Length: 168
Image (tube, rainbow, N blue to C red; front, side, top):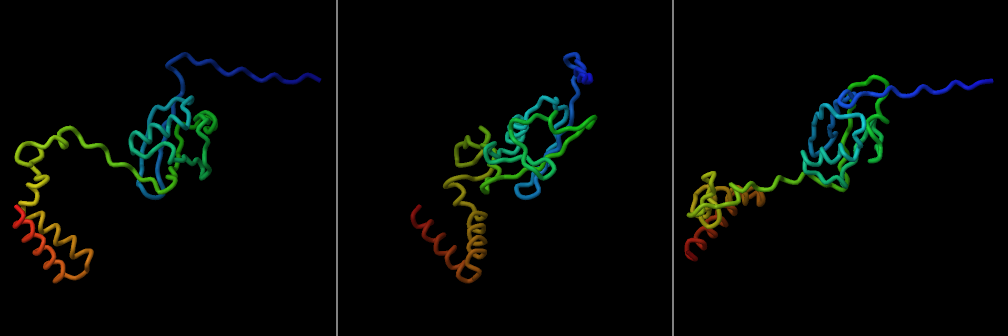
């Protein structure tokens, strides 16, 4: 009895490869909702995690991608997960160990403080911030929030303001 031979894969001309759109979302914190279009079928899960990491600043090693609620190893490629003629795939992101998105690094404009204690955006920084009424109002608000006692918060803010004025 003869066995049927498997049919060879159709060869595709370079540039004509099928691509899929990848939707990455998180079910919990931090909120993530990314759509990555035109991803080749040979894209590995590790490549997807790297792309998501660049956009969300969550470390790759703290991130797991889930497909149909099951973790997917980094060695898999999109072709392994897609069936037939699907043109999109959805992943959920699971962040391990309480890692959170890291805030982007300050731009050069924000880190360069102009003379007089003013950042280029016009916001007072350093000792110049202590000269503004907004700083002391923020301090008072913070103390009220933490102490839950308006009278004591006002007293502390006033004491610190007097002490600061005397030290100048």
